[in-house]
Image (cartoon, rainbow, N blue to C red; front, side, top):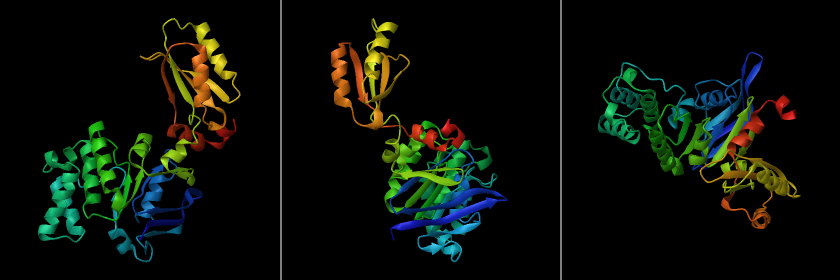
Length: 324
């Protein structure tokens, strides 16, 4: 079955407010979906409904062909869920907690022991395996939560902020783990870390005010950025006066296919100037020609592919600010 998660018209109301408003999407095997949105957008509420922790006001969810309302146990057997906060019994050790989870999942004997050891190894819990969970750092607690989600090798993984609290090395390890599992699973990652989407996700979805406002590959979303096909030219700062810099900027601004020019802060290479394309169209040869005509030493010239943070800010800010 290709479609591992089917969400159709999912809605959750808290009184008069719709936290999630008629959300529909599908996730196929092999997809890693990055679920993005500002605080309060409805990300965690949606994930809780997909996993059956929260009943929807209306709409339906099916996991691996099993309707969550009609066959909840069959659907939940196929889900591994890491909720926000990584709740666990604080007086247990990771070894005891994972053994407890394995028993609940129906494993026994040597198979139960194997599952616990494998999950701990994947999340690198060896150093704290027999230490009370309440004494662990936030990062290790997060890894315990991730280990219990992976323990039964589910077809579907729902991970709410999986790298929250991890140091850069730990983030790299968890992202590598997700990439390694991706081919045989459907994975949904709720995150506010845009670099995480670029690092592990094959698809990105942005939710704002309870509704989906963008859905595509990270590259497709980046192409909606004002930086897509912009060109950054780093000029040699030696002898570059404010007057000369202004004249160079005016040269670029006078081109019909340029929508604007921004001067960045000096860096170790020189003074960067970003030239924005009207309509986000390619303009490399034309800019290169003008750079040659200027005759000013250039330390670097690069074409920007686009920035997810541009797109995220543009489509999630309130309508009143967009109009302004």
